[in-house]
Length: 143
Image (cartoon, rainbow, N blue to C red):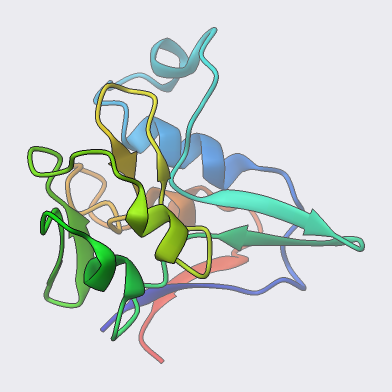
């Protein structure tokens, strides 16, 4: 299965992947309209430690602790992609505590949690963070 991988050597720490992610999940067709005067809440985040920048996002684990911990079945695996059923989520945040990578996070758009779903629910065709990375530090490939 294809997954998102990050090459830390190439990451500039520009945060463009975060903006492209927020835009792809906004439901808008114009990035300026979607993100103007909005504090973005992307499903991928850039962390910076000791001069190294790297992206943190869902790794779509083969045996995901977030799915195992979900008390309502709101998280499930479909073709290797961990997806969220917002209608089932009750906001217990057990999945947030169970994820060892910090990839599941609270949402501020009215739904309860959010995480990367590889842009399967939007019209981009492939992950927007990959398309928006100016240095190709983020790739979507099978390894």
